[in-house]
Length: 173
Image 1 (tube, rainbow, N blue to C red):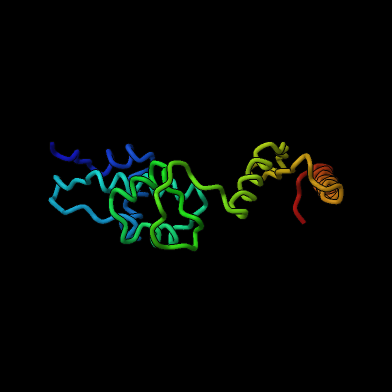
Image 2 (spheres, rainbow, N blue to C red):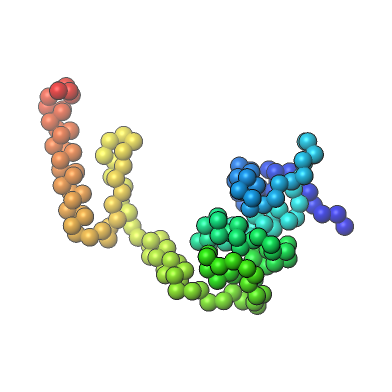
């Protein structure tokens, strides 16, 4: 059975990212470059597995440098276990192989806190106030009273200036 070969656009689509991102990851050394064969240059299964693992590690808040360290020296099988979520590296600063596990280990406190913060952020309600064409102000409904007072002061000042400019016929000084 021969390995499926992907053109860069096909590989990017299969990994759920853009071809530009794939090229960037090649440039950064996160995935190996495909063997150059002119218009027949193709990527293989290992490339797709590495891209899926990169995505999984990014979802766990790993920066690209930590991802590179995490994937370095690992076999395709080990990388595939990361991509499939069967192995979860302990923290972004750790390097070396993580033991295979039937289920991901519990989150360490910093990542648990980060996920809780993301959940809180997702439930927040924001108001968008257009100040001028192309200039918006975003205000969280749960912002501290002092912040909301400042926003109201800013809006009053802007309203006064706009009203003044209208009275003056839009003339600039």
